Image: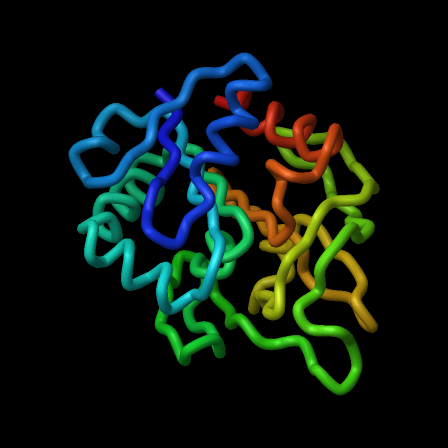
Length: 198
């Protein structure tokens, strides 16, 4: 069963709606027990890195997520802040994050661009098991972006007065800085690819 992590700072209902629109079933997971039968996991993100980590910690989900994704290799998709907290540390609230991927989360320079970035931006995605090489527009709302240590973890790039990482992938772990569930047909196509992956 696909599990969507539902926590205080998340955007779980919108993701559930998108999944249902594609004809798939999903359930919310709000505690470790509800992750027990997960076949795939989506971690939506709205809000800050610090608040997201605090909410996951309060719900007892951090170890359960690590066991499911890192030990059982269950396919995982992190969206927006749900992608950012995959890394080691975020400048936002000086937050220590999950550390599943090496790297940091930094803020866009306010002197160079409007912060937050809000709206549609072109993303170039490399081929993975869930998608062919793709270049299309996706919807962003972000003041921060990830800086992976390993270039091999970069799945997609975009440009906002300079190139930045817009999507990451390592093994069974996927992440999109853009809101895949609010990105029209391109987002739904990509989400469908994740839902169909083994």
